Amino acid sequence: MPKPATMILRILLDKHNLPTMNVLYLVVLHMVKTEVRTLLASNFLVQICHCFQCSSVNKNDHAKLMQPDTMIFNLVLDACVRFKLSFKGQRIMMPQTGVVADAHSIIIIAQIHELNGQRDEIKKFKSHIDQVSAPLMRHYRQFYDSLLSLHFKFNDIEAATELVLQMCDYHESLSIQRERERFHRGLILFQLDLIISSLG
Image (cartoon, rainbow, N blue to C red; front, top):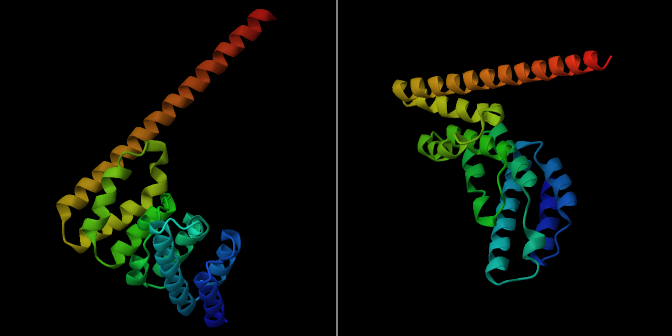
């Protein structure tokens, strides 16, 4: 089933007549259930990206219709991590197609770099993720886990210590922020009680 499915998709791609992204999403969701199908899905996604780039350069009207979305990338990248196909995952050209990565994409990409032992690649993302506000930092915990794992793999205890201290600071600032919010809520409720009792 997977090979005939990808053959049909490739024929449609050659004719610039891809199904809608919703249908394509369902096909990819079905394909990434096994290792072999994930290989086929990743190859097909690379082909879509290549066709999209060629169409964009030629200012083709079909370019927008062929642009894969973040969810399709995440499905294939996640399957590449799950089946340890990290080099296959790295071949997928997300940035070149203009697809915007979300938090889940960043985590999966970090896991692929972790599997490949590419600490410097993960470090490139860190400066951007460090700018995320403290309440949203919990979404990137796995990113920091991948980076910490590579610090240990490279025997860089100093960098690992620095990262752990930084994460403790984030956790502490988030706790302080929550306490402030609780205090403000309590103060508002107290003031409302005073107003209600003065009216009664």
